[in-house]
Image (tube, rainbow, N blue to C red):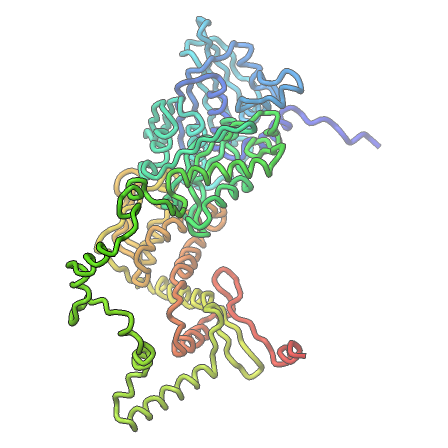
Length: 608
């Protein structure tokens, strides 16, 4: 039998590695921007065409490379950051694996121009699918200019699974935002299909946050600054009113490296407990500086997941720092029982009241005014209220007593019969469940889910008929979004218009809500928009065709939060009648169970 195990060629090995490191155009953008930062650049330009599928170009004024380094940079595991194993645990740079450029070159056509300040001429390389086509001297500015063309041209299956241009460009914007936030001292420019999207001057963190994420955050930023032996925490958190129902405005940086950590996010969210709604997400841009030996950044090829030496201590420090910032700026609720020193020094507080002062006070204008009879503001003496029980009994007597006795009796009798009949059929349990009797036992109905199913079928019927009504707002509502969310909302405007929203773009990244569905409660406009954006952020590749169904389901959830419609027995019975008139009464649009049956045999078993 011949031997069957053999080494993979470098070409295939690089393509496999590219699948881990370069998952989409945004992955290449991240690696190229981080390389520019590591090169000491103070100005970085990013040029995008066709959402990065046609062209990704990064131009920086960093240190540049020699001809030999330029060629070596495209070899696998070639890096200037690691010399021995100890260096792996003291990393402060962005890239260090030596996989990025090799992975990009394996799945794209790459052209690199670079020059060091001390060199008279630069170097130009053209690489296609790991094969070096050209290497020659050229005239170029100091720094590096790298162009990535036709990404995944030689891996058609990978290119086929890329999403729409809007989605891919939004991912590029996410990576650009993270790098630009982490380095406010660096100037950035972003060009998309020939249009300048961002022009960020070098400055401080607050200026960078406002420039990137929108001016609406400027008045809602709360600074955080804590220095400890374990770690330093700096940055900004948002006031409670800046919290949104969409994820994405939460940024953690460990030693200037963006990371994702649900554990640390919980530490921040816990500090906001009681200040924001449970389903809301607080805004924060927080930088944690820690000894690199205490954190492992070599967990994942994208380097966005890390492991800490002591997770619980990090949690405690971060939670305390956020709470301290909120209380320091009088945002967290607190009670102050101390009097102002100026008030405490007044004679009226310091000295006891004399009999003469008490007599003078009783004869004064205020005392006479509030003790004078026949006035609406009269304060009677305590003995005049000794018959309060009789007054309460009169007030509590039903108004029907003023009717003739026989009419009053007939009215009370009719009301009691109606209530008894309704309550015999349905029972409200803790405001959330309806219990009603059926032939085989009991039926338990989840009220909010039942309302959700009813609203969904109403909205679906209106959608299919094309007759969804819209109510114009007396005062249109303005919504300013960040660039990524604005792209998503712009894409969803036609679907939103069909369910009754009248939303129009108003300048860059700003929208005006002029009309809403007729049944939408006042003030819910921004909440619905936030939820729509959050849905679109997590939309799978094959679910674009089902977007209308998800929008209708979302609107049904928003409209089903009416707790008052079922307080009366008539409303309870109407809810059950409407539910069983639906085509699918047993489940919500999201697949949750609406009601369940408890048979008499099960009840007998419960009672032994």
